[in-house]
Each structure stands twice: as structure tokens, then as C-alpha cells.
Image (cartoon, rainbow, N blue to C red; front, side, top):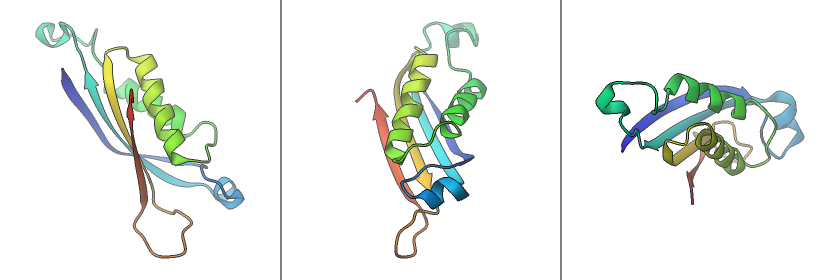
Length: 119
């Protein structure tokens, strides 16, 4: 097993409960920590049988910029499941979604959730 860490992947999307969040949109940041079983791919120095992180980035982008979700927790779970479906070599996915412009009555850097799949 080995880990792939993708940090601070940035996307513009329209997630959130409030109508303004859908109308205006905002930037979301995603971290993915993927536990991968490469089989013989590492020994053979072969991309076959492992996770192409360029493709994985595209999967994350499609999910994040796709349909609106009210909860960033649901968004993180969808990212994890979609990566797992695309790459059966992924045995565990830890997905963190950060929302810097969360509508809260105060000052904060960002709101962040982490989902681990499978649970």
C-alpha cells in the first residue's frame, strides 16, 4: 500500500444551503489522501494498476463543479465514492473540503470537513 496526497485542489462551485451561495458561487478547496493497493505496479514501474493522479484530479473537479450540494459533507462523500468507483485500487479515501466564505456571523478562515470512505 502507498498514499497519494493531493493538497489544496481549487475549484469554483455553487454549494450551500442559501440561495446566494448558488447565485454567487465561491471557491472550494479539496484535499484527497488516497490509500492505494498497486498490486505489482510499483515493482513494474507501470501506471497500469495504480492511480493516475492527473485523472484523479479530473474526477474531483467533475464532482465539485457538478451538481449543487447543500452540505460540503455530502460533497466530500461523493468525491470519495466517485474516486473509489473509478479506481478500484483505492482502498481508503480521506477527502477534506474547505469552504472559505462560509456564511457565519463572525470572522473565520474557513470551514472544513473530512470524510473517510469506506466508513
